[in-house]
Length: 593
View 1 (cartoon, rainbow, N blue to C red):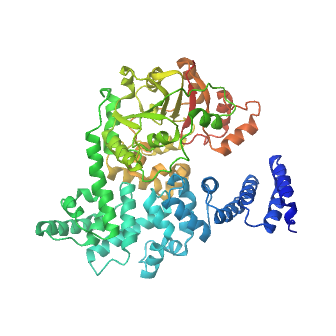
View 2: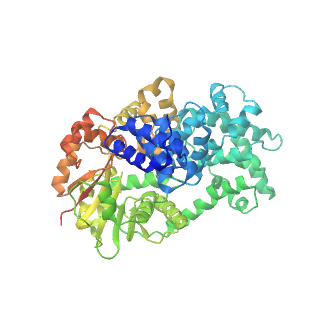
View 3: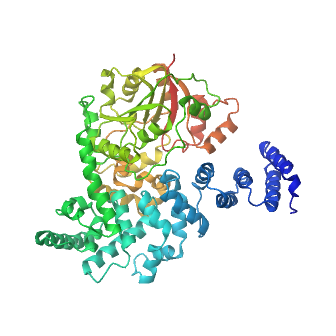
C-alpha cells in the first residue's frame, strides 16, 4: 500500500469519510490505512478506521485501532467508544495493551464496571497461570502458580470493582479462598500474598459471600473465631491473617471486637477492609436512621418486598461512572429519539425528578448528574437501601438528591408534581403494577416524561425455567440457601440448560441472585399488554432504549417505522428474537399536554 503524499491528506480523508458514510466500508478502510501510513499520529483517523472495521464485523482489528488511538489521546469520547466496542469482546489469548487499558478503565471508572466484565474476565482466564490454576483446581497449587495468579493486575482490578460474573473464575477464587483460610489456621509465617488476599476478601464482601462454603471451611473458621475471641479478651491485636481470612467469609462487622480493632493502625490492605466492612456499614445505618418517612407501608406485598430489601439491599455497587456533564433533558432525549414524536419538556427553573424505587441510589445519582437543573426526590421501601444510597451520594458530593422512604402505591397522597419520573425495575414487584403506574402518572405534570423498566415474558424465559428447576424448594431467604441453589444450577448437568441465565451478572451476588431468581413478587409483560396499558393510562410511547445492534436490526427489518415506536412490529421482532429484552423492557413515555 503506497502512502499518500502529505499535501493530499485532507482530500484523501474527505474521500474516505464519503465512502464510509455511504457504506463503501472496505474502500474507506483502505484509504484510512493509507493516510495513517503517512501520518500515523492522526487520532481521529484511527477512530474513523475503528468505526469502519467494527461495521465490517472485524472486532479484533477495531479494538487494536482504538488502542492505537488511545496511545495518542485519552479524550473522553475515545474512552467511551473504546468501552462500547470492547464490552462484548471475548479474548482467548493475552493482550497486554488491552489488559493495561482495562485495568485503568476499572480503576479510573471510565464506565460502569459491569460493562467491562466480559472482556476483562476473558483476559484474566487467558493468563497462563490462571489457566493452569483452573486446570488443576483440585490439586495443590505451587507457590509459583499462586504468585502468578495473584500478580495478575486485571484480576486484582476486577476483585476491587464489581462482582466477578464468571463460573470459571468463581471456582478458581473459591479455591484460592479455601487455601488462604487453611494457611491462616496453620499460622505458618507472614502472608505471602497480602494484597491479593485482601482484594479477595473485599470481593467476597461485594458479592455478599455468595460462593460455596464447605463443611471443612466452616470448621476452620470456627478455629479462627475462637482465636479472635481470645485476642479480644486479652486486649491484644489479633493476627492480620486471621482477620483477612474471616473477612472472606462474613463481614468483619460481625466479629465481637470489630469496632475496637477498626480503630487500630493496620497495613493498607487490611485497613481498607475495615473501612469497607465496618466503618461504611455503620455510616449506612446512621444515614438510614435519619431518612424521612414520606408514606406508610401497609400493603402486604409491599411489606414482603420491603423485608427482602432490608435484608438484601439491591443492587450492591462499588463504582459508577460520572456522566460527561449535565445537559438539558430535551437535548438528551432528542439525541436518543431523533425521529420519535414527543413534546419538549424543559421549563424555566429546576427540573423536578422522581426516582420511584431508587434502591441503593446508583440510578438516582446518575440522574442527578445527567440532567441540567435536576432536583431529585428518590424514594424506596427499604431503609437499608436508602442508607447505602445516602452514603454513596455523599461520596459523590451531590446535594440535589432528597431521599425518603415511601410506597409507590401510596405516593398519590403527596401534592408534589414532577417533570420526569424514572422507575426502572420496580413496578413489576408491586401487588398491582398497573395501579402503581397509574399513581406515578398522576404525579406527572402535563407534558411530563416517564422512563420505565418492566420484565418481558419472553425475555425472562430462562429465569422462569430456572425457577421451575427449584420450584420444589421453598424460596430461600437465607444466604446459605441461595448458595446451595446456585451450586445446583451451576452443576455440569444443568449449566448447559441455563447458559444465558448463568451469564447474567445478577447471578453472582446474594442480593442480585435473590432479586433475579427468588423474588417474593414478580410480574412479567408482553408488548401487546404494554400497548393496552399505555392506551388505558393515556400515555404516548416515545421509544425503547435497546443496544445499538438491536436498534440496527429492527431498523433493517422495519424501515417503514423510522421512529421505532410501533409496538406491534416490536412484538413481531421480539417473538422472532426472544432474547431482545432479556434484562427488561426499558422505554420512555410522555403524558399529553
